[in-house]
Length: 276
Length: 153
Image (tube, rainbow over all chains, first blue to last red; front, side):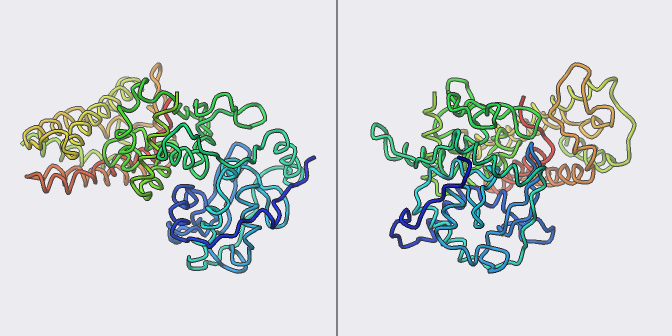
C-alpha cells in the first residue's frame, strides 16, 4: 500500500525531444529557484543544486540537475527522470518527499518532461554532490510518503476544457502543471495535502509568517484591473511598480515568469483572472 | 532644489544606519507609522511614474518632480526609524523581517542600491532619460522587498 508505483517503459511516448521547449518549461516550472547552486561563488543561473530549502519539516538540499555523470543527471534514463518528476520516485526506487512539487508536475505531458530533460542535458556539467536532507526519521518518513500518496496523490495528467479558448487552456496547463502555483496558493489539511475544495484560495504562508494570497476573484477584489494588468504584473513585477509580487518567494517566481514568451504570460493571466 | 537637499540628508542617514544611531521616535508604533507612510508615498510615486513609463499618461517632467518631492518629504527620516526597539509595534503590525536586524549590512546594501537608482532617476531631464532610468528604481524596491519584507497579512 505504501510501496512506490513507478511508471514503466511502456508509458513513455515515442518522442523527439525539443530542448527549446524544455528551456521554456524549465522557466515555467521554476526549477532554478530550488535547484540553484548553494556555493557562494557558483553561477546563480546554473541548476547545480545544493542551496538549502527550508520547509516546516526540515531543510532540503535540492540535487544537481546538470549532466555531470557522477553527481548530476548524466546517467539518468528518460524513464528514471519521468518517474522522479511525475511520480516522485527517486532513481533508487524510494519515494521523494513532496517538497519537490511532483504532485503538480504529475499533471504535465510526458513529452514536456522529456523536453526539460533534453534541455538540462545541453547544460555544462558541474560537479556538485548531493547532500542528505536534514529531516528526522528519514527512512520511516519515506515509506510514510507512500501512504500519503495512496491517500490522495492524483496522478492524472492535465486535460483541456473544451468549453474554453486555446489561450485559457494554455494558461490552465502552465498554472496547474509546471507552474505548480497551487502548491503554495492552495491551503493544506492536517496531513499537509492540498485541500482540493479550496483550490487557489490562499492560506498560511509556509515561511510561518503572513499569508499566501488567494488567486480567486482577483478583479472583483480589486487586486488587478484586468487580464492585461495581471499579465504586466507577472511579466515585469516591481520593475513596473507591482509590489505585490516581491515578497514571500514571489520575486523568484516573477523572475522565472519574466523569462517566458509574452503569449505564455498572457495565457496564465487569462486563466488566473477567470478563477471565481 | 528641494529634491537634492532632502536626498543628501537621506543618503547620509542611510550610511549612518549601521552605527546604532539614537532613536528619533517615541514608540515602535511611531517608527512603524513613519516607515509605512514613506512606503505609501513610494507606492503613489511608482503608480504615477509607471503610468508615464507605459504611455498611459503623457510624460511630464514637472509631474515627475512633484511625486518625487512628495516621496522625499514622506521619507526624509527613513533611516532613523529602524532602531532595535522598533521590530514589533505596540499596536501596529509590521512586515519588517527580523533579518533587517540580523543582517544590517545586507539591509544597508539594499537601501543603497535603491538610492543610487533613485538619484539617477532624479537626474533625468527628458522622456528618453526618464524611460532609461525608471525600470531600475522598481528593481531597487524589489531588492529590499524580496529579502526583508514578510508576506502580506
